[in-house]
Length: 142
Image (tube, rainbow, N blue to C red):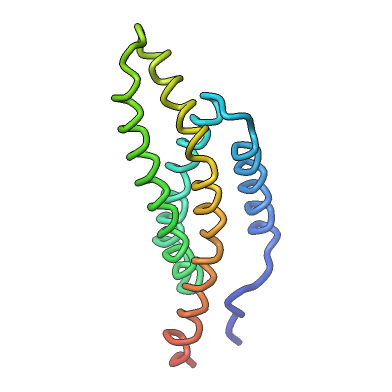
């Protein structure tokens, strides 16, 4: 008997709660350089997580990870573009720590809504990709 493609597991539920528990406080925190650093680190973490899942999971979960990595990589591209733009904008600081704090503060101020939208769309893109895989690619298996 074949295993259903979307089977509930306690491990996946705990992982989802952990991801939401880390992401939501970063998005609703006051825009300081610490929350900007958190946005940057989460933006770099999500593509690595989904690419690892795309390489190691079974076919349905692999399709979901490939679908979810699209908004995650878009998020990385936007963060890197914003960091490079803001880094050269603030040139009046005397040391590098204050310079980076100003850059991450601007990232937190201007980037939190875009990243929240992209992070929120990752499960939707993953579900659409998993559904396409289940409907069209795995229908020929018996």
